[in-house]
Length: 350
Image (cartoon, rainbow, N blue to C red; front, side, top):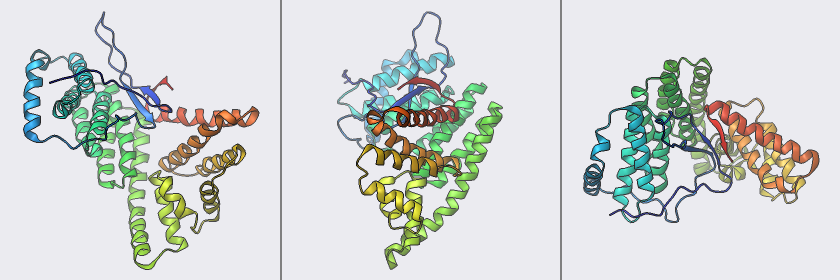
């Protein structure tokens, strides 16, 4: 029923950090579970598939419980976390049985949530989203609520809040403001229980930004509808383009709107990028423009603009020399340092 041979592969350009994990038992080796925060984890050759039917899940679940009967009886938190990690590894090594793989990841998610391990919850859901067609936003909402209820220490509550913040941003990027607001509430509760003033402030500011963006989205929808019914004009293009680039971080779709929008500065940047800034000097100037535009923006918008700038800096770094290279490297480093700071992660692998 279960095959072997599939492991975790992180693609080129992905930056990985590890969340502070619980200490292992004496005499046992344990590696921190990696959490990708920049760029997608390399997906398998096949595309994600639909969730297996309930009958298939039930059969696979029964088989998994038979194999791991002893582990399911464990009650100590650390042992439960190790069991969740083991189930994830089994899922990665299982080929040819979608139902078994789904159940292994699902059980890992639920066991980790019950043990108050938000980091492992996030990893299990990342794997479910990689291999199956799931709503990872709503899945995270339910699982993080459970992890928050099971948490006992400030560190555990803090991890729930920090991962919740990351999922809030993804929810906003999908225009799912209902889930974003619900996740903000989960993060706020966890941050308060962690008694972490800096984290409380971050979540509070994020909640305000989500509410502001949710109101602005009504105008975006109106502009989109007007474009469909009456044709495009510069103001509507600007409204939609800003939303796509600044909020959703979808520059592929948004640049064309900004290129004919009502803001001259944004129009210039968009046309430069769409016109195919060819040489290194032009690309550095373009990256600088997006980076400088982040000044004075809300944290989420500023992060999206800097992320886009960093993507361009990374592309041209091999061709830069001297001061230009040092300046680009510094901004790339600043971007990652900010990610580390705001997500409570530890420096890890590039």
